[in-house]
Length: 325
Image 1: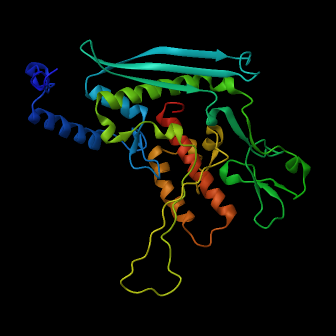
Image 2 (image 1 turned 90 degrees about the vertical axis):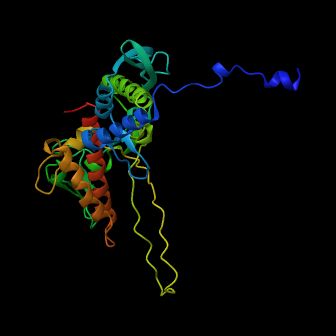
């Protein structure tokens, strides 16, 4: 083939023409920005995960965006595994769902997105074996700061009972991460989570919302995040040398709090988290952050603060994805 032949092109099909003028595109972009700022609510429609650059779009926010753009969303089951007895998985029950979400307008397909979830994801496959109070049955036992025994902490839903340091009713209980003994109880949650992931995925694609939000980060990050204070200088430094900031450290949590336990946590007034509004719970995290930033905080106090923060996160997420009201 000659150079002249290489230069021959079909001018009519060289470029894909835009479907809207620049002016209309700018108007749509501005409308999108105003809708997100004015109609979407933090911790309800989207959430902020410490340590990440973007907000995470939640299912209620995805549904609002779909309505705003006049899109109808349908779900199609692509794959489904329900092994209740673990016959095909070495005796361990296994549940898996994959959905395809399709966004349409006026009968035309605008975008498609796929979401999946399984019972072998870490947060569903395992649970933390908490110490159970021998008196009330609550998983709410704490060790005394003075090392003199154990107590069932009343502020987080316990009965306030006290136990000796060597009480075998406490010391012989299993602890740490263990396989979830009742994975079948989570079947509906796993099914709904896969649907939610598909809906969020198709919404981000169809509405071009990826500039503002990320894809369901809260589903895949398993841990809490600890902000480190700016490093203090231990000796005088030249005035021209600025203080160096220490990067934020992300510490993974080995004992995720269940929704049942999270709902029983109490604020300083004795009000359970299940009875506190999402806005108030979000505001409470500011006080928890201040408590964690104290220089003289003990390990026990740090754990209590982190438990409270994790419980708030669990409750807010459950409300956002519709698991609880």
